[in-house]
Amino acid sequence: MNEKGGSFIDKVIAAVGRENLIERGDSIIVALSGGADSMALLNSLLQIKNELGIDRLYAAHINHGIRGSESDRDEAFVKQQCSNLGVGLFIYRADVIGQAEKTGEGLE
Image (cartoon, rainbow, N blue to C red; front, side, top):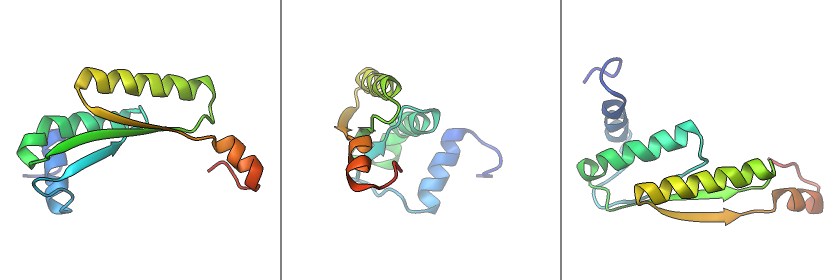
């Protein structure tokens, strides 16, 4: 397949094969921010899960709390999307601001 042409899904399949990212029987956890890129990755992998031989597909979201209520909205969006898609979701809430203040480190 010519990677300059073809569908987005074709490009994902080609990249997975070229980089040996997934082997048959693998369980995959997609880091899901709720943004366009991570949602596109999750949806793409769902579409080609059987073709790639993915055994289990999950998502993980970290609510870092840095953006206050926006961070909570991201979490709620991710929960709803995963529920709609039937994807298991792991959520971790981190007090990044408190940890940064305590240690004197930056937020990133």
